[in-house]
Length: 222
Image (tube, rainbow, N blue to C red; front, side, top):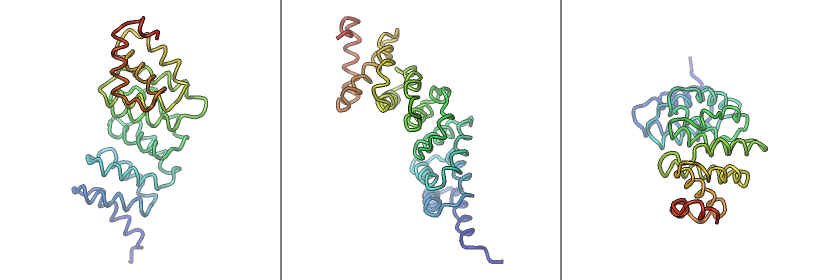
């Protein structure tokens, strides 16, 4: 019995995704996006959860964006409940690239405050892409609870997410300026500076915020 060329190509792609060579997996992910097939979506999502190579993961995400969102989004949303942090993070990253707002209800507070920094950062990026009109203030209120968290890259990701929401974040940032934790106050002030002057640069904004916070409430009134 002759196997149709389409089925044979799909079978080769599936084999390639499981190969021990990252270059073979990369080519398989490229093939999956170049010639989409619905039966590839599940294996692509599953591979995202365990793929160790950044470039392969990026190609897997691209391949998923080439498939109908009606097929990919439900499977990616299911991954958000995974116990594996990479599965949650990569699913969120892919949802942000697809941009289908039907995924918005799945971006929960638990994900936005996930203990894993990579998951939380991916959730912040996905949230600002998927948030529906009118829900921005509520999202900002959750995001500001994460001010002061983590190292530079994590803080920068949060600031970018807040800045992307625009002026709606100002009340939440102003409230955070009186927080008991100086790291939270510094991060809030730096984010507010970036909102006002996007060209200032995060490092400059943080250093300026540190000086202001160190000088105390009198300086912060200015």
